[in-house]
Length: 205
Image (cartoon, rainbow, N blue to C red):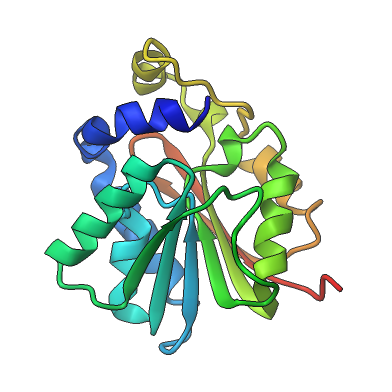
């Protein structure tokens, strides 16, 4: 999948995923408990802003980026509608982020790691832009836990494909290979089974 897929799907994304909103909100609240009140946080691959807009009241600043400009526009509109003046948005690919090293106190990559051809490339970029000791939250759909797969079958007809179908156990095994320190993990019931890995960044120099 490329940005064109997500640009086409952006208008329907919130509607299509609405039944999972409560789980995503719970996951975002869980992530927020690990973030400092004055943190500058990145929401990489922000989609339509579910995580960015939920954590924004809990931190100092959120920068939301996505390689699909239509997703960026929807995040920007959602933040404006909610009166979130500390959310800014820009176009950016998680595997080649347009930010300098150690630009953020924390980063979230919501429901994207399983979509990447090279998930390590995405994590490496997050490690680069987050300060040593900062928090990197990786909420990811673990599709191999989904026995019914109804939603997956639906979106696969639209051209969606997950590059990595993990269980919770195999996903956390992957996280263990990234150089991040896993602090805590938790499962949430969203549109698909959602595993949130809370990690601490090490020195990447």
